[in-house]
Image 1: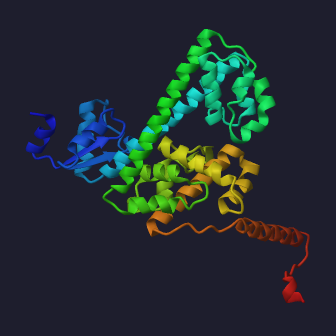
Image 2: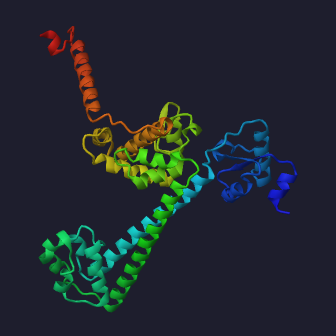
Image 3: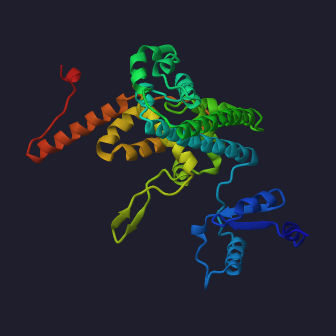
Amino acid sequence: MRWADWLVTAGCTHVAIESTGVYWKPVFNILEGLMEVILVNARHVKAVPGHKTDARASAWLADLLRHGLLKARFIPPRPIRDLRELTRYRASVLRDQSAIANRIQKVIESGNIKLGQVASDALGVSGRAMLRALAAGETDATTMADLARKTLKRKKPELVRALDGRLTDAQRWVLGAWLARSDELEAALSRVEAHIRQAIEENPDPFVADAVGLLDTIPGVGEQVAQTIIAEIGVEMARFPSAEHLASWAGLCPGNHESAGKRKSGKTTKGSPFLRAALVQAAWAASHSRGTYLAAQYHRLVKRMGKKKALVAVAHSILVIVYHMLSRRTCYADLGESVFKQQSVQAQSRRLIRQLEALGFRVTVEDREEAA
């Protein structure tokens, strides 16, 4: 008899699992549907009396569960977890693509070929054709430059100079192997994209497909980022009491480490690295948009925080926007960049008034239209 069957026949109706356990995911998948399973944060239940062992930890969890002192962590439903597996696999494929692109660039650079300095995308249609010719043994730079297409044809003289290098037979073979691997990853990416779209369309909750379209209206959030957000947090925001709780769960809020009146650390907490990467990517895209609230927020914060902290702050704002959009199931309404300009004018006015009052003046402020 399996141990899961033993738990059921023994009359167990609730099971608590620490989130730091190595095998909590397979245990959760096995017991789901058989009984109520609670996944708890290990930081909240780590005060085990006596020396910590697995037996003592189990007894401590059972005692806390009996008294109702365990708070369940967020676990999305099975269809969302399946979608999460697909989006995380896509993220790993994209990472492999970037790594192989860097290796290809390193191989051709070792032969003094500077294709990346002329073509904006060395692995585009024209770039791949030239690289395949290199791997096949082509040595004439003019012949390879003739493979350029569209706007890259205008840079033919620069391409001839950039392709005038020398690769050994071993380097050509390695280049061909990396190009073949890149083609395999491109095909894998196309397959997983199709599976992700199918999983979203066939999700039992019809709002999942609509949610991707809603999030796509946020500046900087494209289809891929919207799919990743849905896969990581789901669409039911009732699981999180507020947007601040969601930001804390995602690890996108400032940390709070204060002792004796001194704040020792304000770094962000740990959360889903996939969600964080997607939101920071969206924040970077939003910072380059024009006339939007998020772009204005980034340019306002980057002056005193730096780029990285400003991007995390914008990513936090995007997550808060996502929470309210999914809660209310409404489209995104941009406030515009004028919001911060009005705030800065009001703040500057108050500062100047305080300075004049400190000098002993009584200040009365009137608008131009009212004074006229």
